[in-house]
Amino acid sequence: MMVPKPKQISKFAPDILRKMIPQTLERHYSMMSYDGCDGGCPRCKSQEHVIGFGWFTKTFCTVITERGGFQDVNIKVRRYRCNRCKHTFLASDAPFYEGCSYGKPIVDLCLTLAASNPYNRVESILTQYGIQVDRDTVKNYALMFRERATKKAGIPVMDDSAKLGVNILKMLFDVENVKELKEKYPKAKYDSVMDETYPRKKGAKIAHAKERYNKSVTGEKLPRFPDSFTLASSYMNHLECFSSIACRNGPFNEIVAEALAKPLIGSDAIVTDGSRCYNSIRDYNCLFHKMKNFFALDPFLARQRTLMITNSRKLPPSAISEYMSDIYSFAKEEYKDWLSAQHPDLFDQETGKYIGAMTTNAMEGGNWRMKYELRSAYQNVASIEARCILLALKDSLQTFKEGRPHLSFANINGVFDFRRIMENRKTTTIAGEPVEKYIYR
Image (tube, rainbow, N blue to C red; front, side, top):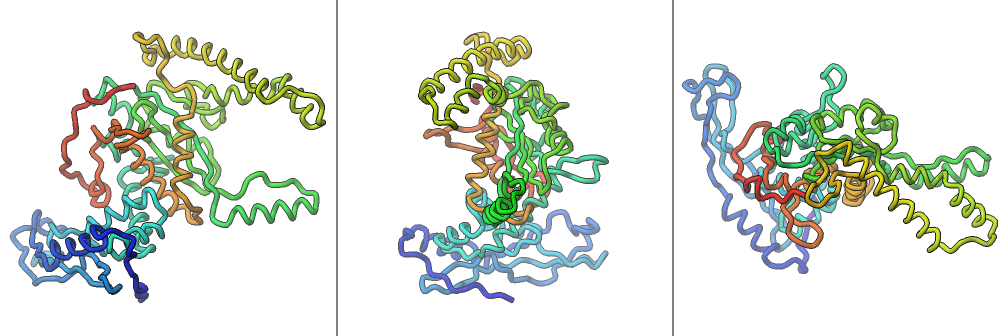
């Protein structure tokens, strides 16, 4: 058994972290007793045959002392025995998730921090709090969360026996798709976007550079991209929340696209790029991708690229930029008029503007935000998908955006908490503000 290395809390950490948090945990939980037995025996559901069977001492958390040592904060949990089926179990109100060695608040804190930090960084942050949790334990909790999220909200494919990705809408609002969500909140707009990105694998950048060098020597065709994962997701543009997400080892394909589109059933419109994988899903193409393809074939720009290669006289970059901007502005206005006629529900009569998504920029930003927040490369697909699920939930439940307080739709009306996933049961949550207080864009 590996023993954690001694740790010392940094003197840079304020006293409220390095002293008050460990002291509060120890004072509140040390030798606290839990003896609830609601529901009787978890195996046979019998209540009259359940008897007390002693007490069990369990570690709620481990704190770091001022001298750099470790001290366990232990609690007492009542043990019960069912004389009917001979099953032995602990008190139902014990603050532990199944399979987790530390208490629920500690596990929830690890998952919250893992949404914005790599696993090793979470360990470092908890050290400043005076709490001992090693990197591998944080990773195991995240993997456990991914496994239980997939079990509760996994998206079925093929014969429904296999699951691909996670239905974020089900985790946030306890609905299967947009159609059910629209019945609850009919005032909102439900336009959505879908896109994918490719986070590189750990060590792939160096391997890619070596492969390019070796093939350049032999004259073979050079590989364009390093080995990477496929991170695909869908996003509700007006609600500012993710609806589905999946991270795979293989390339993006129609099966993945159709699976991720299942939570979008009932959407007002779905915007994607021009990939053939979305042919049976999309309502219209992203304007940005359409114009990107247009400019790639534009004869005037092709002429300028040729002059640039031959070092001949060419227009300054500002003139080329102005030329592209004028064409894009004209195409944007034309596209708005066409979309307003095709999707009148997304046309605002007061402002006279089309308010639906015209591009996948919301998704491009979302996926690129994920790649940025990952902050490190991963070798295992389960590890990166666990973090991506946590990232999608955190981004959807935002309370601050663009430099000011901003409550998202999911934060006001959602029912998510970690217990709903880790315990796979419905829990009582604090009621949010009524939907009327949410400002629809």
